[in-house]
Amino acid sequence: MEPEIITAGLDGSAESLAAAHWAADEADRRGAVLRLLHAWIMLAAQAPDTAPERDQNVCAREVVRAASAAVRARHPHLRIVEDLVGDEPEPALLRAAAESRLLVLGSRALSAWESFVLGDVGLSVVGRAEGPVVLVRAGGGPGEAERAGPGGPTAPGRPLPPDASGPRVVAAVGLGGPCDRLLAFAFEEAAGRGVLLQAVHGRPFPVHVFTPWGADPDASAEVTAAAEAELRDALRPWRERFPGVPVQPTVVHDSAARAVVQAAGGAGLLVVGRRRHRRLPGAPRVGPVAHAAIHHVTCPVAIVPHD
Image: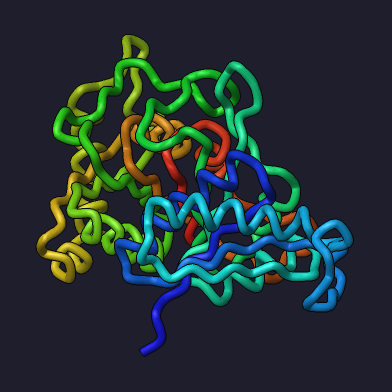
């Protein structure tokens, strides 16, 4: 059986180097091949004996070479494929996503608010890729979800369970349709890391819960119990398939986007879904939960396409 491929997209930035290191760690853990990919549309054919000062591709080659050397220093036995392709970045990365177990990209901070952003190419790749795409921030890793900016504030008065605050994988679970690919990915990642999987479902209280003096405790308890039962039912077949993975189902009575941003604080990986929109023309769509995660969560974020 051919080994899995994990591809890191490179552009010479600190963010793409962080993505390469994260992808290398993942490839080492999985026994996979790491592909370091840089797309350079001006790639020109060169004779084998071309002098370095006349090599038109020297800068592009250096992007891949430098990343490979940095990764090799930490993972001397990892199988690495250096891939410099003559194409635009978007089609090259979309092909890589279709061929790889994971495509890993870097994401940069916008400002002192610590919000994060993808460029047009990255956003298009995330919205169109056939396979999971992981976004990594330079200097990232487990950290507090940012509370500033649109979609980012943490809702007050809704603390997460105390047993869901340590190293873990967080999965944003929607209950409006099937999400088997997302749950399969999340359980596999938690199992491979040997950590807790926190399955988070955000759902605002319905109108009938509220009274002129606040939320009715009996009605809110009934709504919460129903949502928790629905979440447990969705997780049951995956818990049976992965009996060694500890699972913390978490229902947060807030928008799904806010619930997920709040839950991601201190996580090692956040997994969110993206529904495919094959028939819709125009710009790619990632959905509000993935959009909030892309811009306001500091830990690595995996966006998993599913039907």
